[in-house]
Image 1 (tube, rainbow, N blue to C red):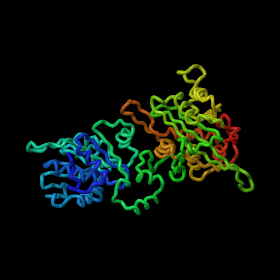
Image 2 (image 1 turned 45 degrees about the vertical axis):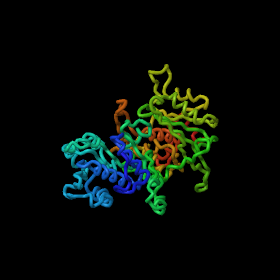
Image 3 (image 1 turned 135 degrees about the horizontal axis):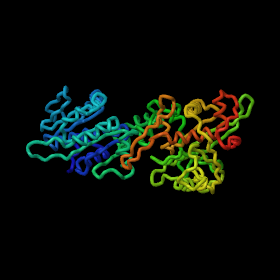
Image 4 (image 1 turned 90 degrees about the vertical axis):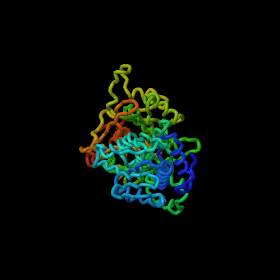
Length: 488
């Protein structure tokens, strides 16, 4: 159906792409947005008004998380956009707008905290929905919208619109990312679903001065909210690594013309740390250590910077030691400066599924033998709580003259450091979820945090022991090669 642009408002090209998708009759679920000021609210409301105009007697619902949010943000935008001549009545008690052709729009607050059984949805009869800022809504509400869309039958035998759910969004690390964005990115969205990204650069009505002012945001808030980067999330509180800060501990990994890792220094050893795990992926972190001698109180000591230069989060069918080691070899084919292996001490036990005498790390050593790797896997894992306290002390105050920097390319690890929460005892709250496709239940986060800790407490075992003993030198040894740990 061709759309006359000026029926309701003058859409930008990106907004027009969304409206054309709405009226193509190809989609039942359409998500639009992914960054601030991309014109998503006006596009959603504009499309809704067009639907009301083209389908007299139709009924639609605009959903947000609460009534105050609707009154503060969505309804004022609607009143600016909608021609007053098209409105017959506006019942503010019911938040129901009736148009001169009998069509209606209901502004419907989710109010999940007060209605967890979703009883208010049960009698809702509509042709479709606009789920505004769907990233702020519950997944059960989205499922209920699927159930109720198309339940209103227009009387008089007139043409019925197809069931339709329109959604606007900002990046979020929740069900919206898993159910829509990730599937879209992987080309796995259902045929009748689509996602149309829109950024501030797609909105021609935003001034250059405003765009420039947004650069004063913290780097990763800028990446999430302005650039629409779904692969980075922001801290919300209760983190296990509570002193990990995006702006302080994440360093831009420069792009190189030949696609190589810009942080990689071929003259330094590679430190490879593992968490013995296969679901949701087999994780591997790749580190290098830079040292600089400095004078402190007349004594020369090493100032140490640990760089996480790369990550591998190998999903099925690549989530085995052989395939991950092949990937390490592919990424660092000419490396000659040495390699050290770290990981969970419990994976040193003999694996009954393997040939006698073999375990996870003997496999790693074998597959990476061309790099002449040395095992630095601990005999036992130190307790979680002191590990957490030491790691947070390094992140906050660089105790032991150690600082940690994470390459911006290590997005799975960065999200892991942010998303892993602290339990009531100061340990890791490792939540588990069931994969709806495979049916496998696995620990969602904490794998990269684990392998970072295994690497740090093994490589810097003496500093960790000194910290535990209030600065006194201790003879406690955690790593196999603890005596040689001054050679990074």
